Length: 75
Image (cartoon, rainbow, N blue to C red; front, side, top):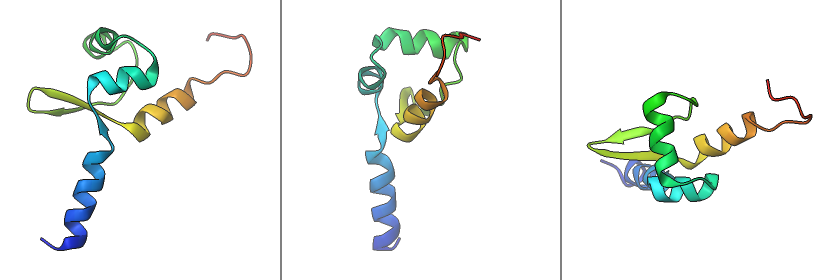
């Protein structure tokens, strides 16, 4: 493995958030993320690493941007 590949892997891992940090970024309770995953309520991408759940910061930000509304319409 080259130094560049190793650096890329480390950088990618630094972008992964655990549930607590993802919930903090989204300003929701940690348990809410679990409910959303199990019910499929929102298409919020996540990664399973063994039994652990991780979220990419970029995915969370993109998800928030898709939910941004310019009117009061909720549809």
